[in-house]
Length: 429
Image (cartoon, rainbow, N blue to C red; front, side, top):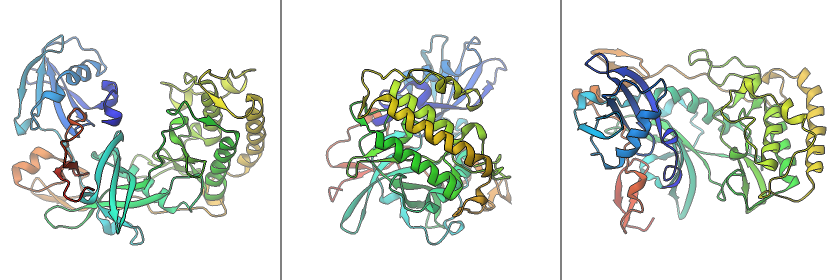
């Protein structure tokens, strides 16, 4: 279903940690499956698996869709064949975040309940296309959420950033906070929604003409963010650009790498949302236009930002237009518009180095203290707890596990909620 139907194992899985089995020698990986939204421990009798996680990912990819829904561990042989499966809850290393309460966020932000969202598609890791009813209207939105403690600060800052950006024709707008509660307790924020723009990204939709006006709109959006608001997107690229077919406008989305210009970042969360010069938007706009025209991604592919040298693109005498790329003006015109803007920004950027210098700078607070929860008999502010601990103490918690992509389409008359629950589609929603 969507992103996970034909993706590589390393796109579907992430390694939470590597360890050693009880025998003291056999390697073990704790792996998160983003498709089914569950964690599986993968052990092997082979000691020669290397330093990366490809062996574990490839082995799990062979078996994950046939495992019981309550499986917590598998063991595989040197060639990845399945040796055993365990459903022992003591081997469950699923992490349950300590979600921030709704009251921690601005009361002005709209909310929608997770149980009111129906999943239609999987757009990527922790990002789904969902629908919900608002009066007589059915809305389609992107639901961005987090299931691990490492994403708490990212979601906090990204949600506040997008929610504070004034309406702009070339920036995807904020929708609602997504809330849920356990056993009627206090609502917690699990993520947020943004407007859904159909048609695929600029990278994915190869049949669409990339018009010169789209470049000008991208430049205007970047200037609006950087110079008007003091916000740096941090990940301008063809896969973070959409074309709204209703208005024929380019739109920038996905602010999880964004930052306040010149800000050191949230001090309590590894300087989350802090500014990195190597991720500046002028540099990445240059790369983006080159990649749109040539379909050559190698200058950025598998490289860290500090290793991506924009001079390698700028100094090329010719940008060869890819045979599948459609433009409405000569390549030279695109480069002339880009070059004029880059020269203008070079002067401006020497003088503006901090978001507080922006005329309409936006700001919001750092991540507030986590709620206190019972942790091994004491009330503590911990970012997460293991599901095995919560199960053993009988505590209720947020559930995420859902059917895998291989189980779609669902039987007629059924629909999948964003909670992971399959329900009867009584009203045809």
